Structure formats: C-alpha cells, structure tokens
Image (cartoon, rainbow, N blue to C red; front, side, top):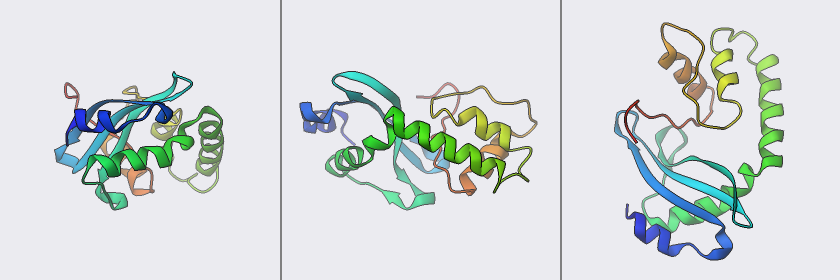
Length: 146
C-alpha cells in the first residue's frame, strides 16, 4: 500500500487524516491509522482494519480503502459511539453474562479508544481472542511495533 497515494486521494470534504499503515502479520491483519474529523476537529483516532480475515474484509488498493473509510466514518461520531457502547455493554450484561473472565477485558476496550491496560490475567491473549470470536473487530499490535 502506498501511504502518499492514499493521502493524495483525500478531499477536503472527507475531513480525515491518514497517519500510517500497520501490518500485524502474525494475526493476518492490516490496519490504516486514521483520524476522523468534523470541521477539522478530530473526534476519533485509531486503527481501522482494511484486511481482516475474520470478517472477510480484504481491501487491496488505496481507492477501496478511502471509499471504505468514507462509508464507516459516521459510526465513529461521538453520538454513534455512545449508542454502540450502551448497546454492547448491555449485551455483556445479558447475552454474554457467562463470560465472567472475559467481560472485564471487553469493558476495558469498550470506550473504543486505544488501550493496553487490561485486568490481571495469566492469558490476556486468550481473552482478546474470545472477544474476537464473539464477532468484535479489534485492532491488535505487538508491543514495541507500530
């Protein structure tokens, strides 16, 4: 992927900024680090997958990535994030109530902001895997990598 090519495709009306590409080869996942903005003010910054085998997302070029970012941007607006958080936390209270060990990991990520602060657990990777297996898309990266 060409970072400059993607950046050059962005229009002012897109109100987004592309920072980097991240390849998590061990997990067969690739992300674009992006800032979503409204009137030039950032309302969310994070990693959006563009190659994610669990969901069948395999975007192969910069044009498709930009179109995807345009399509999903509204999901990251503060109002829509709040709605999602409320709905999903409620799911964990009801539907996933038996996931007592995994639930604190989900709750630590439920703000939809980057975190590496998780509950003490002898196998945190398994907890994150459990959450992914429940259908959530989580950007992961190895400590010390970009």
